[in-house]
Length: 299
Image (cartoon, one colour):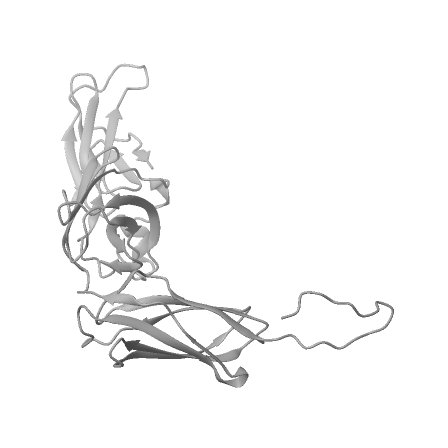
């Protein structure tokens, strides 16, 4: 397109802007049979919603996939599923056409390689308390040494709207991913609904639970909670004194916990007890041998 304009500026002029296909590139370095791969197309002076046709082919001319979409703001980013019978070792490219504008072109070529496989995703424990360090592991196949990877930790939600907790950058080493993560609960435990509160809505208590996903080369693995669920368990320290300040030594207590269960314990000679591995949330402590003593509420 011309970049200079030499006509008079005191009158209106009509000019025609030339549409063009600027580039067509893969956003991934390889293509894998049976997997989606991302691509991008850039244009200039193409109308909003113009039809775009993409056909993926192998170097020997075999059709590997296609897309029929629309382009906006002169850029199209999409993904296409590579045919499961694509030949390992071949090369893949895509043809792009904007039929209404008579534009067409080809992308760069990328290798067709065996699909990435992620297996044996696991936590080092099934339960965690604040401050615990968990080891996350997975076996990785068909990935080069020291390829970048990302581990994304989610808090599982019963309705499927999982909350993203954090992302950790790592690499594949010796065909594995191994990293440590220190668990911390960032919300207020008093906001966790108790069994009693949830029963009013026909639901049951569920403690915070977590799973992780691994992302390699723009592909995610483990969305079906393949890692298993890590459950948050809490602890509670109790120091009980009488009205005059004297400790309540060797006193029996009953803890009514957020999940509807109860736990019994006995305070030591200093009126102290620590309850470990309890479900997080509101709880109530009662003193069965003290008639008329008000329960202690904890959140």
